[in-house]
Image 1: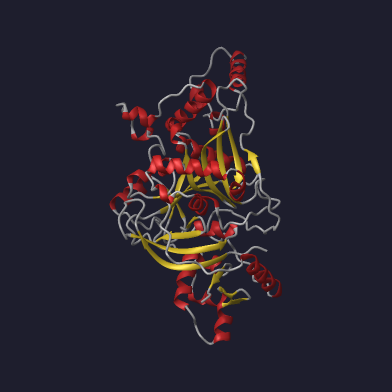
Image 2 (image 1 turned 30 degrees about the vertical axis):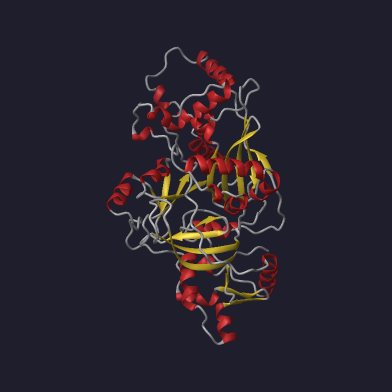
Length: 491
């Protein structure tokens, strides 16, 4: 049995990574020793986000730069002209070896472009900045020992079932946990028709068609999909790009040096980071270590659920890495970094398109897993608005936790006031709201051998403990997680 184990830190104040203001970024924080993939899906659907084992939820109503969780429906995603140009540029580079300037370089050279043609992700960070971690240190516990304790408690006193998806509108089935864990490296270049074969088929179809075509035929022509633009490798290509999916934990054993060298180069060149901070240990803490436990079930995707590295190998050289979490209802982007020498390929945008393609591929087997989470949309920070350029995007209402389409009307509201409720229904409420009456069922971890409900804790000790803190935490994570996760309450 796997169980989520967290230690709540409370309110956190730090420097903002978006507006660079000092002591103006407000959030709630907690350390996650272990998170089931179901629970983390619940948490990100309430505005939480992880950085390594640290989880944080911005206090949007008082922070300097409100952060709205954003997702894209991968099955409804449509390519823009800019997306298509980037895909064609990559295909041409792989096929002919010809290097063309990116749109950003063209604009620098004096060429104009409209906002609709803007190159999503070029010239800006493709991911949210690493949050400033609190000075607090989590209590030292043995995760496996606590899991065994929780398993014994559950077998002795099974908890009533909870409806994980009530009122959410996203059909993500609750999954049983398997202890079997495997590391999988899979090539994510599904076989596609070669360009020559596709041209031949189109020519044959044209020759067999009537001489006179209806005038509206062109308008009825089916638009090319993302998969149509992702060219299959050919032996005659000048360059060969191989994309593999590697369990994050396996990176530490196999190609840690290559990943660290790439990460260090990216942070130094793109973000002018402090070299002293870019150690192997800090990179692993940020991008390799994860509280998510790998899970596999019969109805899960082939790679299972958990944390992975989406690696891009060009002619045997690592040029980009997308750190992602594959969850029951989504693929969540954690971070993306690349070799600055290949900026002309617009790898930030190309990586996002590849991750959307990954979601589309997984959805063929697991229909509920159809969303691509891009982290936070920060409208008050112009350079971070690029995430909203992906079609079929939705923002999470910070009060009712329902998804609202990102439309021009929503953007206009955010132009007027940076914090918005978003949900247009003024009467709507949080269906997963934690009320004080639910407090007795919150599970507490008192020490390595004692796991009890809050009600039992009060009866055993005769004290209420940190009641207000536990209620605050429970309201932030929601009733489902509050009654399912273990709250570390160790002195």
